[in-house]
Structure formats: structure tokens, C-alpha cells
Image (tube, rainbow, N blue to C red; front, side):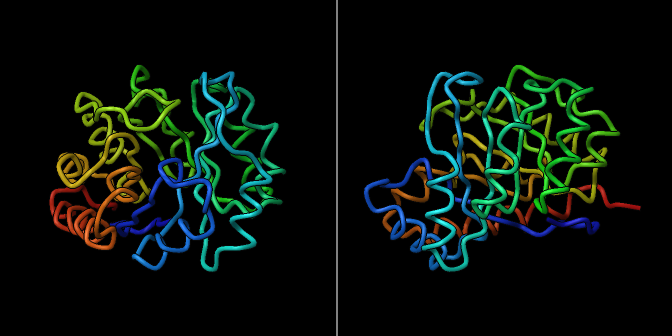
Length: 234
């Protein structure tokens, strides 16, 4: 994850939108179509009402998909509990929600993630202000995630009211990776990219496209075009 003054564009198809009956092939085609990361949504049925995948599926993808860089979005009530399992399964980054830990608990989870050799992301849900990510937390993390839908299920409508959080975080952390996740497509990516997001998660917009590589190209271009308006790191 980037710490330069202008973080690079990264496109992370959300595997939740794939055909799980042929998961290896689905992930492989995303990488061949130009994806930088594979966004893996892990839900525990507690932090959010849905249940998705866990470490065994992550390990299967890691073992079977060449070039898989798994960006693990942990929508779980106890983020510390799963760090070792995800690291052992091949996870490259581990993003937890500030709502699950609070400010005091976040510090220890970030340390634990780093101790297990993974990059760390901290997420805020739509109802949580970006200021819940304090300067201390944001500076310690590798990536900050702004949810643009309510976490827990795919296919929701993009919530434009969340975009100002991206701007606020980019102003405070000009060198960080800032991710947006939820309802992203060619039609909704521009305000996020202009506000300062360089990591774009998109599910159905990529997996269901006739030409996924074209969608990935356009999402990347939106980020590259938006960079001129971002604040620069000192």
C-alpha cells in the first residue's frame, strides 16, 4: 500500500459478486482483466447479519489463483480473533471496522495485524463520521476505507452522502491509500476519485460486465484523472 504523496490507483473487484461455484476461474479472470487486488468480504453474522466466507476459502484462493493479492475486508465483531487465521490463509491486507473496536481497541488490532505480516486497513460505515479515525489511528494504519453502502450485503445503491468523508480523510492523510466500497461503477466512481479515493472496490459492475477489462480501465482512469485535485503530502 502506498505511502507516497500521490498513491497509485488500485482496482479491487469484490469477489462477493462472483460465481462461487467456479471461484478459482472467477478470481483468475479478474487478475487477467487487470485487477490489482481481490477484495474478499468476510462477514461473521454478528457485526453484520450476513455470513460469507472464512479462512478456508481464502486459503483456497491463495493456493489456486496465481497473483492473488487478497484485500480482506473483515466485517466481524471481534477483529483480533481472526488475524492469525487470515494471515495463515494468505491474506495480504486486513481491514477492520472502527465500530467493532472503538478508538482504544483499534491500536492493539493494528499492531496485531502488522505483527502477522499484513497491511492494515481501518473502515468506517455510512453512519460513522470519518473523524472516528483519529490522526493517531490513521497515521498507524496503511489504508482507510469509506463504506458507501451499509456493510453486510452486495448490490446496494451508492450513497453519495458518504463522499465528503473521502475528502476529509484525504486532506488529513494525503499519502495514504483511501478505499471506497459500495455501489461503485463507471457512473459513480468520479466523485469518489475526485474526492481522493485511489482504491476502488466494485462488485457487480465488474463481474457482470461484458468486458470487465474495460470497466477496470475506466475505473483506473477516473482515479488518475482525479489526482490533480488531491492535496499533496509535505
